Image (cartoon, rainbow, N blue to C red):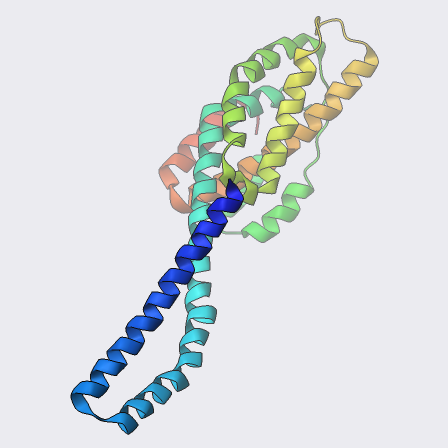
Length: 246
């Protein structure tokens, strides 16, 4: 079926190309019949052909680059909308729940404040984000709560993964998969309050991977809000600050 569609499109393109060539020949022929200026017509044809490489160069290297840039900007905008939707609907509550298992004072707030005051740019902030330290411990007493939250948000996150625009954002997709993994691990255990030491260590590693990825994406999201939507930025920052997970 797909092969047949490609053949039909090629046939249609060939017909269009042939029609344009025939139309051009007919116009030149009519021009010659009316004005009888064969040499001048040939001169104009050669002049048009001489400029054709310049037109091709302009279309290929300038217009094409401009269109690609505009298309890329549209993709980035769509991705930012998806990320914003994720954190508004699910990400912030998941991040707050996971932060309860982090027993190290992670200075996320300081990075955001420095960016807000324009003391650092996004490139330097990436180094600071990578230098953040975590001490995740999957305390069995608190796993039931996060398991409920993840189960409640799971279908929403699956819907996000079906969005083709996320193919342009590998780190966000990886973060979603890390969160999914934690959800699956918790769901597959019957009694979260009586886990073995190996299970606790395994879940602690899973939480670390998911939480650190969430932090990275959330900080990038906050930078985006600060630049584009200052009011939403303040609202999101205040919510996280009030939760004491910063």
